[in-house]
Length: 305
Image (cartoon, rainbow, N blue to C red; front, top):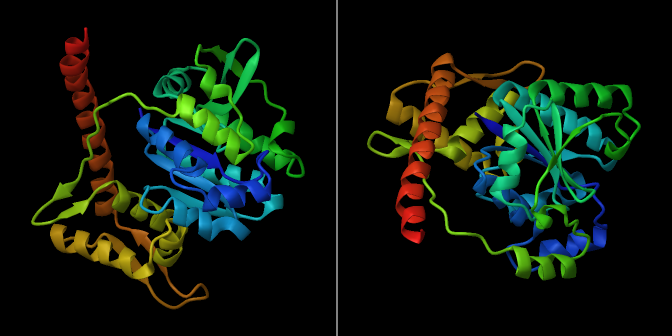
């Protein structure tokens, strides 16, 4: 199963002053904590929604974390959520929708939401509800339709009826509003259990295709522009082209089609050969990770027992 996530890093119950403090605070901060917890749970395609006035600072914080960004005006958060969900609908079997205000959760919570058969699922515990939703393709479509019908309303006013999944993990329900709260709860819940980590890449003479390059290529195809794709990833334009050129040299294939001129100043899209390469790479990665987890469990869990 392929899982993606849209993380809202703006318009939460965190004031602008506190956001500024998080951006100047020691690492890891709340942005990294949330993103890393999704990634530890195996979520690969992550889109972070950032407000325009803080976009560059937040993108710098998450540089090299393998995520994509969407810059949004404060009044257009719902529209950006819809755009993120629609993009992931094409890529993923299950989609998570969350905010940075709920950064403390384990892989077990994500597993509960992704393995649920409900169209729209929310975890709960003793009457508390978390700010993370698990969506099927149909559930994501339902939310997008709600946004289009009620574009003037904020997320909490959406007319949706989720199914609640009871879990025992208290940390997933902690909503962070200040730097002090984050630091206090991180000292309690921020410690991670040891786990296996495998990063897959393809190579000929050099490594040319890994998670970062795949994310870049997907963004190019979605946005129709190498420059915009690099900007959304917090990557320099020259570095983006360097990665593309390396991949094309190693494979001997044209991976990105370029057109020049026109009203939009030219466009870029992936070739069919490139799309097929990405699809095979992702299948390969999924099977490697499944095998690696089994090996880790056999070795480490058996020894601990």
